[in-house]
Image 1 (cartoon, rainbow, N blue to C red):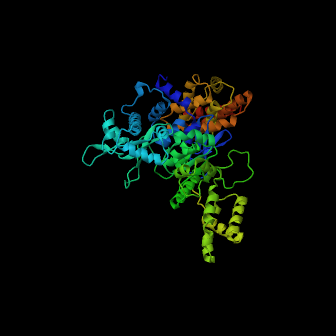
Image 2 (image 1 turned 30 degrees about the vertical axis):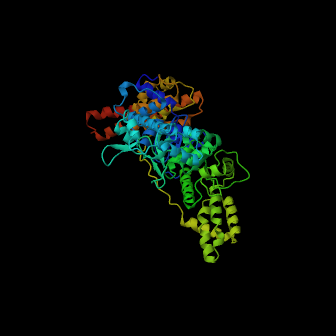
Image 3 (image 1 turned 90 degrees about the horizontal axis):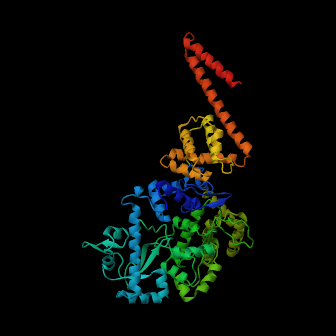
Length: 623
């Protein structure tokens, strides 16, 4: 239990993993002891964003953004420090000291909304299971046709909404305010005044976030002609459909185990599939696949193997192409998309940035219907044999080859292959596909290669100019003083912070920011045990001083030059830096005295005094 505000902050930092935090927004790829990805703070084309878990920090080497896990959350979610701490305290089940609790905070509103949504889910489920409403029997018949029985209803908390205008409202108004119920999307204002239930006369599918909390609902019409067929909760403080996937809470363990995830279109696709043993499937909640969805999934599958299992009609094929495009966008810059099912394999785990496959049973049924009519085992066979997206694209186009007869038609037809083939960056693999297409169409391979080359010339991506942070050039003495401070941050040093401080002694720092950092380190060295703890405390100390926080990653980077030094070399490095600082100061003093001497009249009594000072300084410099 955390007693004070500072203890709470430290407890939260102890529990935070910066890789996990950053992975919620950035797809990371491990290289050595660091992780790299596309910077979320500017339009990054090549991975320039580095996370160093051993230090608990991140830094973009293009735009200069840097910080620790808490600062990352503050920046990406546009939150204040106090808000982040309160939210994380709630997440970790920690008590916020009374003296620092915010009155009427967003956190308290969210808690009430989550509770109201959970009570609503239980209410709808109870109406269905206990047959407490006239709609319950109709809903049961509808679900039975879909192969959904009591066990599945209980597991997924499926329910029914009454035809009554205020059945849910009358139940929840006793414990929750109108404001909370309306914010939660459970009620809506009536044209006649007052409030009515948002969901009526529908099968209710509760939506849980990845932590299992009830945050929203999908509602399916159960009467013929009822419109719309599906009615979904709107976005709220606790629900963002662009960042949440239906079924992830019940699928995440299976996704990790299978090292792959199946993306489907509808709630019942996921429910039927999971209920029949295909547990690693999820669906978007009434919206197209987003980059946030893909980033979320990348945290659960190391190989980033994603199967697209949408309807096989024209709309489904468009959804497949759109989904693949979003996936490629997220993983751009981290390597190539897997584009060839080679018979050999390399040992490198990160050979590909991601792997996109398509599940498209020829029967033309959606996953729900296919699993119920043909069987889960048959569907699993299609999973095992699912083609890579590039193969799916080419095979889909080849199905229409007999429709094109004239040279003009064939030329137009070949042009549909070109964008697909041009995405294959490996020249050997591209050559294999070009040969395959040429043989299938009965045309010369060189003709296709010419078309690809022309397409690539016409679509050369423009190089985007990155505007880097403008910083003043450090003086020699500033650089030396930064190096001296960085000695505290060398991770493998065998010297204690106190010993390092004693070696540095009473060196005077000239820059105001460096003075503040040094004095803060002086206060902390007796209370921290290692470099990571020192950095964590420094970030907390300077949470309201971003200009000082920005210096810390620079010091960490400088400290890397001194990693692996022997004790003797480490100490000598400190003494050499101090000597350089003293030399610079001495030179500055001589320059200052010379200027004074130049500006004074030779007949002035002070002239001789200044001349003696200058002589002594120069004499000391030459010793």
